[in-house]
Image (tube, one colour):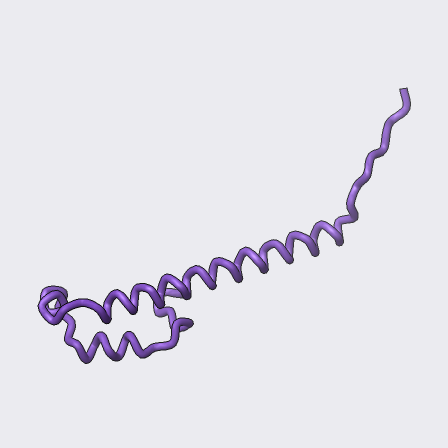
Amino acid sequence: MKAQFGFVMAPSVLTRRHSAAVFWHGLLGRIRRWRELARQREQLASLSDAALKDIGLSRADILQEAEKPFWIDHLRR
C-alpha cells in the first residue's frame, strides 16, 4: 500500500495564523480588562461617605481614582 499524502499547511502559514490568534486574544483580553476597570471605578465613585470611611478612603482619593483614564491599570506588569 502506498503512503497517502494529505493537505499539509506550510509552517509559515501556521506561524502567521498562530501569531494573529495570539494578537486578537490579547487585544480582546485587554479590552475586557479596560471595561472592568471602568466599571470598578464607577462603582467606587458611587459608594457613600460612610462606606468609604469603612475602607479607609476619602472622597478625594476616590475622585482622583475615578478621573483616571480607563487604560491606566496599576496591576498590569
